[in-house]
Length: 134
Image 1 (cartoon, rainbow, N blue to C red):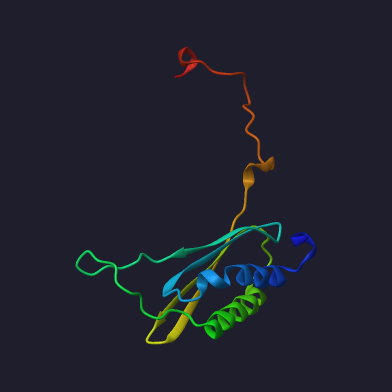
Image 2 (tube, helix red, strand yellow):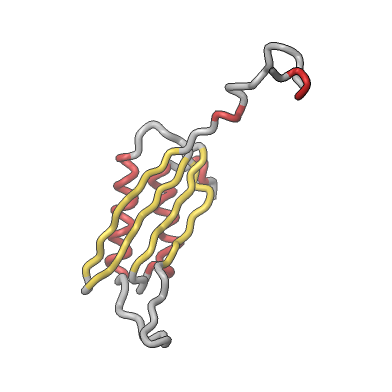
């Protein structure tokens, strides 16, 4: 599959389809998608820590249902319409499930790199030594 030929919204849809089994039954976390030249490079899920009571990990509460995961995926795809004029960065989708209802927040982060050659330091005079310093 050639991701470069796909629109970013379709790539996001693909990412969420790949993560569906991991998101299913999850209580909370963050889906992280790294983008370079409007192409998804890396993606994954940062799960919130698993809680324990009295040092024991018990059965987890019910997390996201299949329908909630599908709605989450659609929300992520729709959110790409809000992205403006940047091609490099990260998108983070925070989510949580409480009492059967899910919520999500979206964070766009654009990245720029000045070190590519736009600016180069060239001294006006030859190299100085410590002896030459005032």
